Length: 441
Image (cartoon, rainbow, N blue to C red; front, side, top):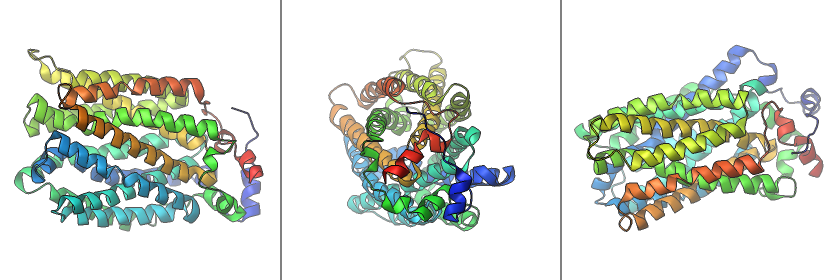
């Protein structure tokens, strides 16, 4: 990557009449407040987005679906990323904070509508809207963390966002067996809607607008930019490489993370409560991947962290879905270790991927790039779930197919290491070639 001088932030702020970014001016207490607020938003989103994966046995039973049927339903829901792409572009045009709050409200409304949908088509449509808002909310939060935190805290901030997502998923994992057994899995969607309303009410005054976005908007850069600027001459190689790697990594990650609970309950034959307990402990330990990923990003770089995380994800998921051996005395230990391994790899990879992905592109199209990531993630989810649906009955079952798909995280890591530039220690302006982009407009 060409080395360029960082943008003179103070001059740009004065010229645009916009406030400086949080990471450049405000106190550590305000930095903590921002990180805590975004992590809380992510916790709500993590809870909501985990309902389908954890509740898949009950959702399948409710709509009379088999393995292929539930996989096909999830594949249709993945079309939500088309909406997330449009919403993410609005993050660039209308502002990070405003769209974050709008999408939080949309998540709550969609979750409530899905809870009362008894027809599978209506349910799928509500879920498509739900996941579109979830995707855009996470995109907005990731971008705010990247733009508002100082250089040395960017990866750490992304790790706290990931911890928020993981905590929400863990809470869903605890509550789902209890709620589904005594009431209905639909109550989880109602609870998610209530959580979203409370979070929106409490956090709307605490999350600031990005100073970098305000400067870019005031200077006219955002309005002059195009949805397709990421594929122009300046960023084409980066964009194509990142999106292709995102496709491979997401096929592996979505396949591995979506079917863990189903695998333990329906394939291994564990009781729902025991499966929840094992996943809760293993996933809790696996969340150490977030701080370890942040430390790896800050000490060794984003790319080495992504590489190690990809290998861990593939090997851990392969062992989890293809094991434990039938007569192994300590089957639970195999499940715990392998589940912990691939969830830690996913966590660390998320930190490295979010850090690198936001740092490689300029302010005017950073939100749109997050939307492109969501679209590619949806394509990966559709591809992965469709492959599972088609091949599950032909190659020995759902778990065998998931094991094969998890291996795609390894070529993803190799391509990242070979073709993308390292951004550790660079200012956001230098990493994203902000000056060159502004001159090209």
